[in-house]
Length: 451
Image (cartoon, rainbow, N blue to C red):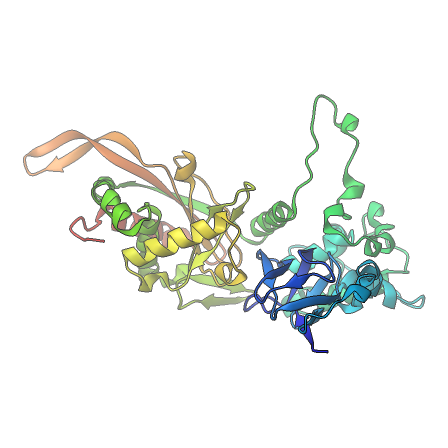
């Protein structure tokens, strides 16, 4: 009998593990090669995992809700197509037979001993950076931010790694909680590992109050997984980076007229829309080459200057959440290439077809708030980047036009550019000059170019 072990695939250069959201196939089902077998969530994106080989799903090795390391086995596929009716009962036994190392919460509970003692810092490490993975584990285990600040870290500048928080949880399992921890979380670690399905929202359930306690006519809406992740990252970004925003108004009349001239022909020829977004990205990429210290990130006391210019663009998902895929080496693409990339990422984003690599490696981000009818915004930086630009709606305004014959009043197209930047490493002069340079590229757009 030919049995093939299916493992958790690598889903991006920085992705080391994934959470099993849902099995799309059951034990005994016949599957084709490359057919989707399960849904997996990482800290960047949700994606479907295809079968590495066709056959019959013989055994499922991990449960929904388990966190599985890249390369770890997740299922067994029988490639000879034999009847697996005798294996059917395994479908009900699988939850008890899940691989323990795939679920950190279960591993911690199983390995905790009565001799363990909780090791904590004498003083809280306020303002310390926490990775999304550490924050997710803390939330699932009921560890408050107040308690997390007392967890010893062995990473750079005392940061808490996954190993640190798992060791803390192991010693915390059977030890009494100290005063530094939030009282309401003390009883959660023993109960949490027994809950498998993410849909049950184990960490959030104890916090939900009866509707009557809020008063008035209200509806309680539980955040979905992505909204919780966005919320955590936005709070982290505001805590990590002192945000400053500079504004510039740009006259984009020539740009608008050029796009109006070409959009119908481009649609007919390429079957795609010619939007303003690739034009904005082109201007930003040019300005980054002029001011490369905008294209940096911060690691403790070190500034990392990125030579690749990977520009992220916010895309609205059907759920209403936003996701930010990025265009790799945007400065090396012409306007047609950028248009193709923008349309491709936007379409795949709306259809939940983005991959972790689409979201990894961004060095600068642009958000088109004008698409919502907003004239300007103050965007929040995508960590670990240090700057982000919001482009507002284009509006017609009366303006003074300088001509050789004198000044005239005319109707022009204007838009606002909002540039938020991390004041730890980007001063007002650099942040202000950068957004001004982007506006200059837009105002001086070459109307004689073709696409």
